[in-house]
Picture: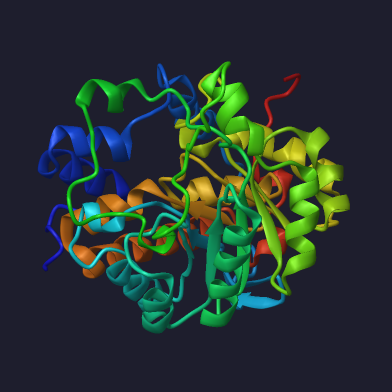
Length: 362
């Protein structure tokens, strides 16, 4: 597959994606929770922030590399966990991991991947993280953990902000259903998500939430594995101390891309509050709305060790498989390096709050 000649930014990939994908599938992949207020806020918050450059700095040894969880990270960009890559390309996650490997980008594999986690690991040429939802039965959760360990995954990413699905009206209106032949293959034989035992009362409160994860569950998971556990979906600074006490190795500030609870604040607005509370005790990452290298610079300036990128990966995958995903990731890496150079920052340690323009008296 050849990259379309007019494709020079992530917005171009989104445009091509929207024109090629049928409406119901587009509603699932690009759809927001409820009225889409949080999804829009993720982008608007980045656009509000302005950069303050420094001139004539020594950039002769500039580098976008860093260390995260004891491993070298070429750029502070990680592929976010997303379900069912085969919805948009026959090779699914295998094409995505090939592109990640080509660009030396870490990838997070979803519990709901449409390709076995072992097959993805076999194709990988770099570190993989495994995203985990706590299963209804502890033995099922532990089985997933053991498979990830055996396959060589480097960390677990526990999603904590979606004990139930959000209200996704766009999906409902479009009537999206998984097509035949595509499923969460790693969950084969396990109790279905959202299973509600026959009992009176609310299906949410008395059913799905009855076995939702708690901080005790986080402590249990951290004690069961040698892998570092990151908590994805932390938005409230008051949860940071609890995460540290439970044994988490990292926090990912995330509002689920605006796909779960609507009217949450933008991730980038919450990030500095969470990073301040973390105070260096564990790394803080973020996702939600990343579309430019300047967005990554702003996130690093406000306390992120790295960012996760989600929907743009599926946009590029739909347009042209591994080639286009690699091209998209390269665009983002290059834009970030350009943003560093034009603000006079030679490494990530130099990207601090002073790179954000603060209006006098604001």
